[in-house]
Length: 157
Image 1: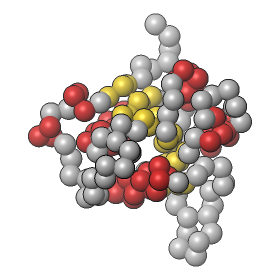
Image 2: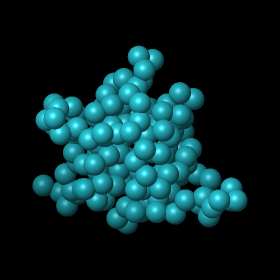
Image 3: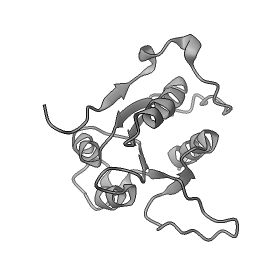
C-alpha cells in the first residue's frame, strides 16, 4: 500500500438518515443539479466528513481525498462538475492544485471545471482580497452555509 492516505468515497447510503445535519440551506430544486459529482480535497478527515455529509444530504455525489496527488489521479479518470479544495494541503497548496488543474487540457473539463478554494482567510469588507484570483470562488473554511450557497452559484453558471 502506498504512503498516500486512503481516499474516501462517501455517498448517502453510508450515513443514517436520522443523523443528517441541518444545513440551513434550501434543498436543491429539480434542476438537474442532483447527482452532481464533486471532488473534495482537504488533509483534515473531520473537515472532509463534515462537508461530505452536508453535501451528500443535498443529493450531491462527493468523492473526498486528503492529498493533491490523489485528487489529480481521480481527475484524470473521473468527471467532476466541481472541485472544492482546502488551501491547507500537505506539500502543495490548494492554489497550486488549482493552477495545475486549470493548465491540464487532458483532464475532462480541465480548465473548465469550477474550483472553490476553502481558506481561513476571506476577502476584506472593502472588497479587496489578499487571495490570488486563481479559483472561481473562495469561502471561509468554517462557513458551511456560505459554502453551500457558493456551490449552488458555481453549478448554475
